[in-house]
Image (cartoon, rainbow, N blue to C red):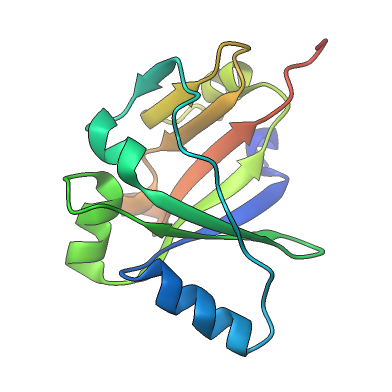
Length: 147
């Protein structure tokens, strides 16, 4: 087993209408939901369309065993918009927690599709796994070892 993909952190679902989807989940007892902060803290950002990336809306629900994420992309071109237009609503990626974003990106041994890093080198990496694995895998770190 690749240790990079051992600790599942979240499931991200791309949706057309984030308010409607959140209301549905709340109606079946899944919540509470909070808005994810604007995606502006990334000083190093390697994504196809940074403007579209910054316009995406995210909501998160922290369940006892996993985080659910809703993502509503803008109309601007992005991998999330492309997924929604081609496949409809559904799971866009599985997110795994790692202690070090840079080390995980190297250790994964899979080409990176997109990544972002904050000033302290925490951040995310999306891997090119959808064609072979059915879904995009992502690693994320929020705490840099030693800090």
